[in-house]
Amino acid sequence: MRFWSPFHRYSLDIISDFPQKLIFRAPSHIRLRMTIDHLELNQTPGSCLTQYNHDTCLWECYHSPETIGYHRLFIWVLDSETDDQWATAVRFDVYVKQKIEPLYYPFTTNLFNSLRCQLITPMNGTFSRECLPSDIIIRVPDVRDIQLQIDEQTLIEGKSFQTDIYRVKIPPFIPDHVKNIVLMGLCYDDTFYSVIITYKIE
Image (cartoon, rainbow, N blue to C red; front, top):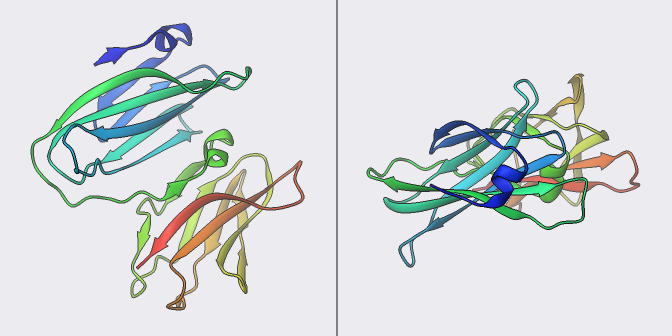
């Protein structure tokens, strides 16, 4: 493990250092994100997901490795009150001894991070066309509406059933030409929808 000055400057706390789910406490104006590297050339480091848990007020950083070997997990920090760029706060050095079935997390945008979204289900970012989940449940603060785009002709509106928590129904059949489905949000100050999260269809 290696620390950089932003870790101490912004008073970050490590709640859990379990490699598949790192958990941190940070001040309210601080955002976190994780990136991963594999130390061997031509080896895929796997996938990761960073989200803010509103129930615990903690940042959760998930990592699902694809291969064995040495991995480096970098935690980056951003002060939302300044115009500074993302800075490295801490690095975890992890050796994966045994290959397991990887979980491919969905692709999240900067908006997912800046709104402090929390993905409740499904966590797997790749859907089988023959066995689709019934819905997506996600906590998205500070938006007027969310919708799921299947293709240019198909938009499905999300339904709010708790404060900031939305459920979007996934149709039981998705056409073969669709390779990705995109969850979008309409922020209060915007007149157009922006991408929050993307799922892959296989």
